[in-house]
Length: 222
Picture 1 (cartoon, one colour):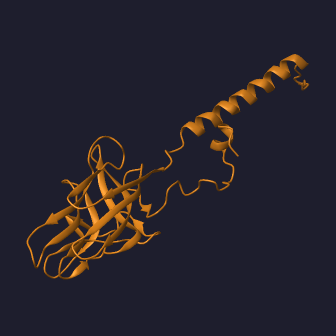
Picture 2: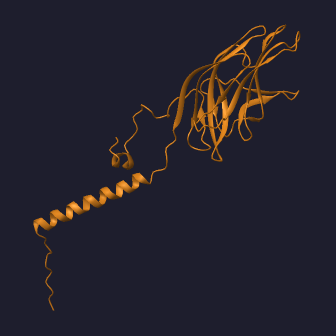
Picture 3: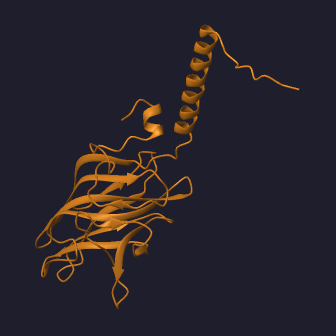
């Protein structure tokens, strides 16, 4: 028995509706793909100019949630003549810490990092107070933060029980019995456990052309 094959044809109007449906379905699929993209890391930077002189302290709130993440203390001591002067140190609450080192005498020093230093899980963080600098009436200034410009504290702190990394930039001047710190800015990384670069004030790809992706195209980005 001969079965003739009959070509299946559609009207022009039906074919047009089919094409439009296919395009709409494709666009919806790309849109869902864009929504499924993981959250992008973001650096939040705060510019400031806060002078911390003798007998003053500054409560540093890196992410502006009204919780003190670190206290920068400029402490005046009157044990003269040998120790008369000022001490500058960083005091973190429990769970927070700074990149630093410990001497053979047990002293904890907060490192004065240079711009571009990595701050993240591989850093050597200290638990407790980190000494920065001091100025004595008989010895002048001492410590890793004595007379520095644009140096950075490497910071690890908690947001809702998750670890985040950040930095604080300071200038410090000191002489006999006098030391003054100026906080000029600070930043943190919004993604938990993700490293940040000292001095970076914005996301790594800000202002840099990125290759187009389905997600970016779906959101109207190129």
